Image (cartoon, rainbow, N blue to C red; front, side):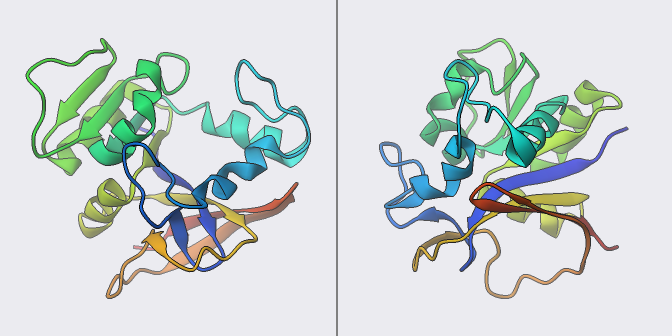
Length: 193
């Protein structure tokens, strides 16, 4: 069975979204800069894939995951990724109020984060599972379910917004990768148990 990997872009001051994030402002005020590494250099307009270098390799690595777990806010604020995060892999949306029916065949709504992770891991088989969304990540961390963090550290200060880690969160990590991409430092950490 694969690992659960949190994949997030983050500012130097720890924000994964700017202030006032919401349905029409998914990454918040000024938060678009957090995904600027995807646009550094050239980008394939059909896949959003950076065309070269470390950024392209990291992007490709993210797309080898076999399922996605996400919280409902992130899913909805990202326009539900048009129903397909990547390559038709199943998406498990963690929400306390699941709709009666999903608009997309590959999207399932689950009211418990651990159940969502278990279902995603089963669906992914030997492949890893990608996780997005602060709410889902915090729930998974409290449950001891996160295996790794893949952080795209963008050299900006947002000053305020939504932090990945909250006051009082505790954990220990082992750095397993640090690679300089164009406009970003790609960090990979294993959660110590």
